[in-house]
Image (tube, rainbow, N blue to C red; front, side, top):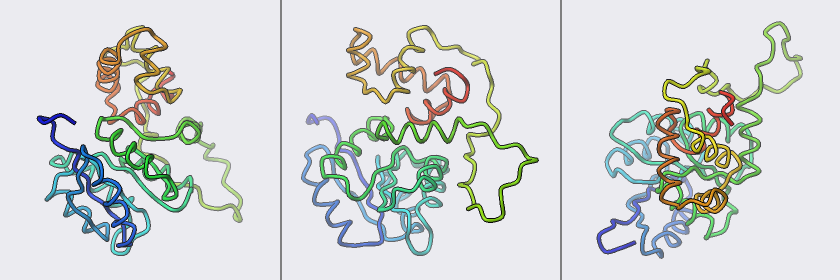
Length: 240
């Protein structure tokens, strides 16, 4: 962070005060990050996101009053709030993951992750990058690109209820109004492989600034919120 670059503003949302205190200590120790507020419930998170306008929100899932998935959906729907949201939970459950991304989250992190992972996630989301580990990315793509089951084949009565279908499962155009260039298609393929900007730049022998420009144009052409959603949409449209 330079003298003219404002710090990343973070809102911490979790119903456990000790965990919020731990996150605050970790994040406030960084010169480029400042915790601007805390919330203990989903309803508080919605209100404080609107009042504080953070850049990044760390969001628990299971909370009283309103869960983190619903709070995420409401915050993302508020045009005055441009925060990127990372779901941080104790439970490595696919239904939480899919519902979180469907609600508009840009990242998913487990509470047993290290301090370095939390700091890296906040910085990545503030920079407009999605934050999913490669193995999680594969699970997401498997879920979001899977063909829907035939309507005539009901699940057995004993089968557990599946996770709700993502909103992005609505029909998508097969051809973009503004098609990707060959280079943008190459960048998108590497994004789908969970490559960082530095790795993409090294692979394609171009500068990181050029990669950022390509990623920005890809998001615009796909109408995607972030890199994670761009990859999901691209796979469903057969572009990656």
